[in-house]
Length: 283
Image (tube, rainbow, N blue to C red):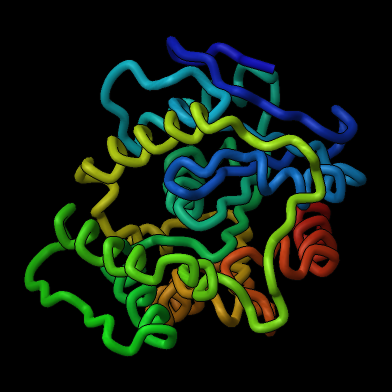
């Protein structure tokens, strides 16, 4: 369904019993949408939770962007959605770029967020892009990290992401664990190309903002909720430095490593992921 919040309409997919503990999924990308995650985990998690997946403002099945957008706007949208749905609070789960949003949201609205889960989060753009390039070098040793000095910039991000596109059809290899050949969606429906283009525009706009380039590592110490960090051992996004900061700075944090999974633990180790997330929310 489309739900109006703050002058736009968000596409929202709700699954599970309405009186079960609510869990909001924050997708990555930027601009990936909630469809893929819900195809793998929506019905699984909905057996015991009230799962809420929302395409962010301007992404896929939500209304297209009509102006600028920042990460802070997305946080305001989530909070407005919670109020519209009549929920006192909910747990949140952020994957990749969504992990940035989950961290911002948990810190900005501690009374609204009961628990926070991060799956392979991207809290520091410079560290994340460096880790991605290092992963690409395993496939293409000639790929070199472009020199950069000073604070992260949009040009730095674009230069490093451009290197990943040099991998061509092999690019997905750096995101998957050794036991994962491919990720095949269990559903038959695919998102139309025009909605993917909508997501591409969102990505371009959000990555041009100062907020996207800001390291969120200082916010980890401000998390007051129980927090779970799920990291695929073969994931190329979350850096060792970010994991270390989570373990030292988060007062009530739990770290879980999925031994053979990559960036998509929710699909690559689906059964274990469902149990882990469900037990954490319900505990």
